[in-house]
Length: 164
Length: 401
Image (cartoon, each protein chain N blue to C red):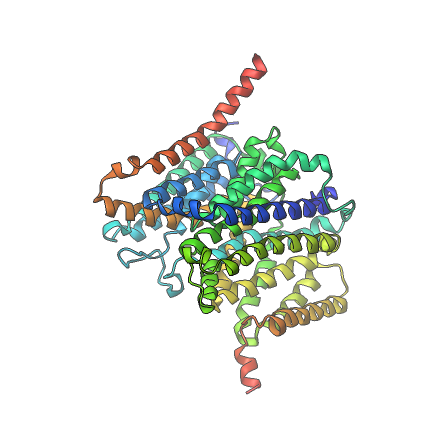
């Protein structure tokens, strides 16, 4: 199916962006141009290889862009497993929160908070069971990585302050 | 295979393949070490350029069915491999002002992110969508593969062991390249390449055998020439030096008792690993019974510990999470992740050796086409590129003939 009708940008029923390869290709093309601009001023052989690779990426992205626009891939894309974007964003946000609080509260307390939050939100367990499971796993992780393997982890500024 | 209730069989095949690969490479180390290491010594930067290109050719096989997207992710990987200080001129390239990127984009956080965190994110999502309603696959049956299966994979095991041993001898290539190339070769040689990635037993056997075969291969230049093939063997050389054992030909003459004991202990270690793995396999395979809602967040935590421990850097943690999100969308949007990783590994080898070769030759391009090993590697590359076409033509002739 070609023509203007073949390029729906937003499917109102599903709320999903259709023809995503067009957007991915455009983003990659932008990345290639930005990378080429980033190394353009370098001298000698330093810029040749990244410039060539940026060119290769740009050509590939351009071919993908043209192919995605000429051939209707909406049916293929619709056949892909749907992504629950809201849920995905929450999981990513909680994980980013885990990485953010880690240097403040320390790795092991942050792990407990992170696992508690996700187990309560994702699993079918009751909250107290989810929290108990998170606590048990956090202790197991401490015993394995902190006690036996002595793997360095962020101790936490707050924890260090409180413990002197 | 796990989804078909054959998780135990996969573990059993992985055990056998690891044993075969490990013992094969130890035997290579034992009998063929000196002549092979002399051969590797003849490799100059020109040969390494073609070796890297040969590794890149395997990307086409890995990204079968998504060739354009595979090439795009490979180009992205090669571009990302240039991040950091240029070793020849000292210019920072594409570091975006981040000091942590001056040493280059660390490979392990990228690997952990693309292959581990992305899967963990998928598990977190699937916990609510499907896992709750789907029955947990039953893991049953004997661990060790049956005799007919073993006979069927014998050639794959031997071929992969040879690939792993040879790649192990060549410094820099490593286990990832060996695993991908052997997987690619197994698929190309298979009468049913379409089954790969959908529970084909040879898809387990090939990379596992090659993966373990690299171990013995890497020790060949390490023990005979003192050239470490990777970070692990570099540490190993340090250990030998502490004990007064200087790697080189003397290890096989003056300190032969220690060296041959070491090699034989490598064989013993592989056998012990197989025995322990065989005993514990039924329990290990039960990991799939853990609900994905429990497993997903735990995998992310393990990934964070691993990435932080590499350089004690929170920047690496953010890299892992970033690559995890990118890897998640790459998988969902059918952009293969393997070419990106192969390109990240081979990119520096390709660029460094290309520029070194050009410097040595004074900018003369013919240097790449006048050395015998270069010509041999070029022939292998052309053969690898043409093989699918030839195979298709042969199949077509058989079909119509």
